[in-house]
Every structure is written in C-alpha cells, then in structure tokens.
Image 1: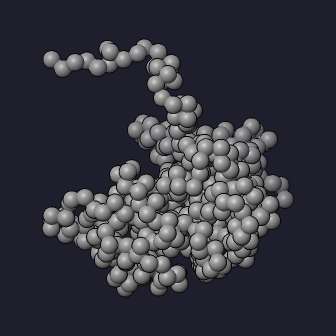
Image 2 (image 1 turned 120 degrees about the vertical axis):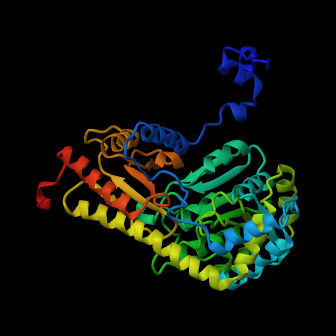
Image 3 (image 1 turned 90 degrees about the vertical axis):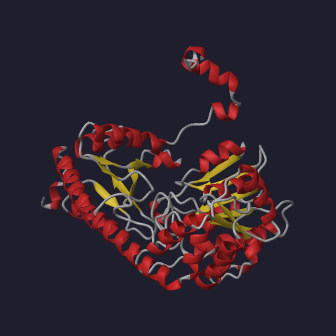
Length: 435
C-alpha cells in the first residue's frame, strides 16, 4: 500500500510553515485577483451567471492566437524541436525581436541586447535581482500590477508615488525627480495595468530626462524598468513610445519588458523578453538561466517566424485591436450612459491594453469600502471586477479595474443591464438627471 503522507504532516500547519520558510516567504501575501477568481469559480459551479472581468487573460474562443503562430508551434513540435533552447533565447528569435523593435519602435538594439524568458515575469524578476539589494530604495506609481510583491521579495524600501485620475494615474515629472536620489530601480508600465491609460509623451520624456540628469552625478545609477507588454494594444489615435525614443541618452539605464502574451493573446505560450543595454544582458541571461525560466523551443521558433511576417502581424493586430476596442467601447459607453441617467458611476475612456478604470461612487452611501462594493456587484449583478487595492492603491475611492479579454460583447451588454438594475435598486438616482 502507498504511504499515507497526510498522516505524517504537522497538525498545526501555520506554526510549521512559519518555522520552515524564510520570514520573507512567510509574510508574502497571495494575489487578491486570484482570490477573487476562486470566488467566481465557486459561483459559476453553483450555476450562477457571472460576467468575469477580473483576469488579465484571453478566452481562446473570443481571442485566439495568430494562425501563423499556432501552425508554427505545431510544425516545430512535429519536427522534433523539443530540446533545451539557449538560456537567453534562440538566436533567430533574438534577431527577430531586435529587427521588430527597429521597424516598429525606431530603436536599433543588437540581438545581443535581447534576453528571452518564459513570459514577461522572468525578465521583470531578473531586473529586480540585478539592481536591488535588501534595503535599497525602489519606486513605482500607484496603482500598478504586482510591484509591491516584487519589492517585498527583494527586501527593498519601496516608495509608491501617489497618482490620480486627473494625471491619468501616472506620476508627474516633479514627483519622480524629487524621489530619484537614492533610488536604484524605478518601475513604469504603459499602457498601464490596471487603469488602461497611457503616459503622456511630454511626461515620459521629462521623467527620462530627469533620470539622465540624476545619473550624471549619482554614485549608482537609477535604472528604469519599462514594462511595455501592452504597447501594441493602443486605442484610437494613441501612440506608444519608449522613453529611449524620446530621450536617447536614457538608453544605458532602460530595461524594456515585453511578451507575446497580450498583443498576440498568447498568455499560455510563455514567450517574453527583456531588451536592455548589451553590456548588462549577460547578467540577465545568467539569472534567467539559473532560474530555468526558458521559453519552450517550439514557441520561440514560431514567434521568430511570426515576427518576421509583417503582413501577418499587421492583419492580426488590426483584428485584435478592433475586437478589444469593441468591448471596451461598449463598456465605456454603457457606464457613461448610466452616469447621464443619474447613476453614481464614472469611467475613464480606455487608451490602451485590455482594461478600463471604472468608478462606483458608493462609499459612504451604504458601503464602507471598495471590498463591500465588489462583493455587492458580484452577488447582486453577477459582475466580477477588481478593486484598485489589489494594485496597492489603498484609498477607498471607488475605483476598480475591469478586463475584457475573457468576455463577449453579448455578455457585456447583459452585464451592463444587470449593473444598472442593481444600482437602481439602491435608489441612488440623482433627481436632476431626469431618470
């Protein structure tokens, strides 16, 4: 008979965990988004109709990966290309990424500047390990995805720069410049997860110039981790730019992070990369190599071929941008229509990524905090969204993230009606709205 392992384990699992793991690990919190997702799965299993707007992922039935990419992966597997790739990526993929950046972003990096990993997370984590020692100062703006967790793992003294809807949820140049002394790593993401907003070119250029000016006299430079994983998913006339394209002198200090996960709906393909100064790439290569966080060889080969097929890339991007925009616009128009009808909601028109910032003006009107609003929406309207507290913005401001990658337009229309019905049951319609 097999050995029954559970009978051999401690009964006081909390105490046993605390004694076994490091203090950093013991105090590490799980993702609030994943916690909400667990609740959603439970309600769906009970037969509830839930519009799940929590995950930054794509439902393949709504957003498939490019056909050329899928066919390339299958072909590579059938061709027997299933052994280990080089630790920092296949040469043909690194070359394809460098050429893609030259053509699309106007940045001429060498293939030796590219470090491939299993998604965007390994280059992000490697950047923290490369530049941050315990006790060092790090910085980002609020709200932002996952930065607090990385700061915790690195043991840094982290500064969150407060932002607001009035500044598109990005910091001002003055905020960044004042906080730069002693800062080893500044993390910036645009288009921004969770808000779906983009940083203004003038602000980004000012921040880049502030870093250049600061680093001229700093004992150790401030490095800029620029997470641009959503850069191809811009909305309308919005255009993404790298800080290096705006202020070339900042190039020695910028690490770009990117992946196929968002622009090509390939979250499960696990192909991402860092593009950084070539003199620093060997250090990222060593970290990624020792983590073993290599992207699968078949997916790397297929990505290289796809990036070189500019026609296929352009056609796919037209399709996915249109599909994302149809969903985000439907939500935005629906929410602003409710606002015109006197309901206590607001939103920021989406500018990029797959997210929209949505506000329920309910705190102090029967609700104590964002969590109470979130739970009420889930139970009363069957709509799951994520409070900005999951992105380290602790103010009970009524702001939430919604993500449209896993829903259809029809589901959005149904969800909007349920939200309006639930709000009207609260009897909070403004009398002067004529509703």
